[in-house]
Every structure is written in structure tokens, then in C-alpha cells.
Length: 340
Image 1 (cartoon, rainbow, N blue to C red):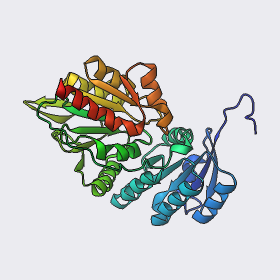
Image 2 (cartoon, rainbow, N blue to C red):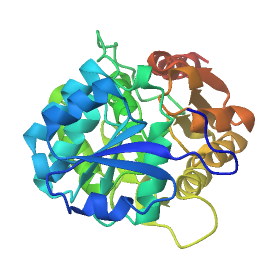
Image 3 (tube, rainbow, N blue to C red):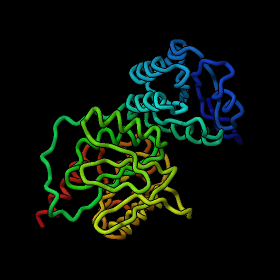
Image 4 (cartoon, one colour):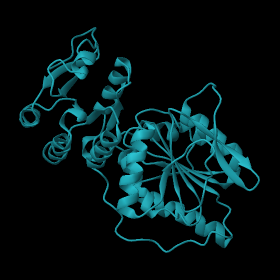
């Protein structure tokens, strides 16, 4: 059906929540950007989606618990469409939300998100490449360790938006953690990142933790930072620590990368992953201007290519690589510089 001339085309949205007067329906039904439909039973919702796939599905995960996870898993197997899950992000809710992301959900929205924020994130999720929504395959083999002593690379920074957690799940086990600290920055909440860290750390026996004020960047560890409460990097002697950023202009990931650039200079490798917005592209430019090395995920391998495309347009990436090739590109940098 053709959109009506003069009117904005609305995104068809199916809400799955148990209560007919639940918060999702109340929040979204008056939206001018969404054409909202509701279902209150996972089995009926699946049948409906198979008949007429919507642009995006919003699932009240707290209502359904494990049944909601089974719904996400079955939907991604049978008829992949972009899914956004809603949760209060209690410890149990955050664990379920991390599991939903690992199954291919595009995004997680917390209880405090405004109606405008919901609209924006649902519309962004609806633009995902559905052929790339499933989680990337885990690495098939481990790489030989890289000796840290004579490498000039002092930090690997990974940034992304929607879909970044699953790109990270594929990349992190293959990175040279023994050679440099890893800092991963996304737009997710601290509660979700904590659950994600527990899930990935358990699967791959890696030490992951939320990066909070005063915490030191350590080699052999993966530090997760949420851009909603941005931190900078403060050098104290020969060590670097998280330091709260003062309010300023610019997008949060860009500002965090600027702090990283000024602290590490040419000793930083920065990678832009999947994302529905451009936050991170200008920060990548700052890293490159300070002599660091920058890589962007190839847009054709990203579920949400806006960030990769922005990095390419601004010419802030020295390399553009498929997702599965990024760890090899990073390891090659260590090998090349060590040998020089």
C-alpha cells in the first residue's frame, strides 16, 4: 500500500504485553510515528506475525519472563523481524534482556524511557537488516597470545549503538586481551551491561566489568561503559582511571572517545561497530587526528549501518572491515608494530 501523500509513513508496531491496559500500550498508542497493534498471547502473536510481519515488535519482557525469551527465540528462527524488549531491568530482568539480545533482539528499553525515546528507538530498530539480526557465530578457534611488553598499543576501544552487544559477543573472545585493556562503549544501561558481562564472561571465561568512576584500566580485562552516564579517562602516573565527564557539547560516545584520544594519543586502536545513529564517528576522527588507528565495521555486515556509514563519509576510519575480520585486523596491528 502506498503512503498517503503529505503524511509521514508510520511504522507498523506489534506490542506483546499481558495487560490490555499495560504501560507499553498506554505509552505508544497516541504516537504519530507508529501504527500500533497489540497482542496479549505469545502463540497468537507468532501466528499473526507469520501472516503479516510488522515493521517492529515490542515485547514487555517482565510480563512473560522465560516465555518471552522463548517467544524471541522462536520468532528469530521462524520469521525474523526487529524486536525491542522492555524491562524494568531488575537483576532478573537484566539477565533476561541480555539473553534476548543474544538471541537477536535489536534493543532493550528501560522503564524510565520517555514516549519520544520509545518512538525513536522503535523506528530505528525497524530499519535493521533482518538478515543480520541473528547473533554472529562464536569464534571457532583461539589465537596465539601476543606478548605485551614491546607494543605501543595501550588501549583497544570498541563503540556502537543498537546491535553492538552481539557484535561484541562475537569479537571479544578473539581480541588480544593479554596485550592491551579493552574498553567497550554502548548506549545501554549499566544494569543491562552488567548482565551482558555476566553472560559473556561465563560463556568465554573472560573478566568483564562495568567501568565506574575511579576504576583502573587493566590489561586482560574488558571494561564496559554506558554512554548515558559518560566517563572520561584520567591519567595518574603510569595508570589510567575512569573519571566523570563534565557537561559539554557533543554526543556522549564522541565525547568519551575525545577523552580517550587526548589521554592515549597514538597508542589507541578504536573500532566503530553497528549503530543506528552517528554517535562515535566524530570521536573516531579525534582518535585518528591524535595518531591512533581507526577501524569501522563494513556497513553491509552491520544490522544497523548508520554509524559505519557516517565513519566512512567523514573519512574517520583508516580501515573498513567485515565484522569477522576485525579481530584479525587488530592482531595484525600488534604484530606489525611489534616487529617494526
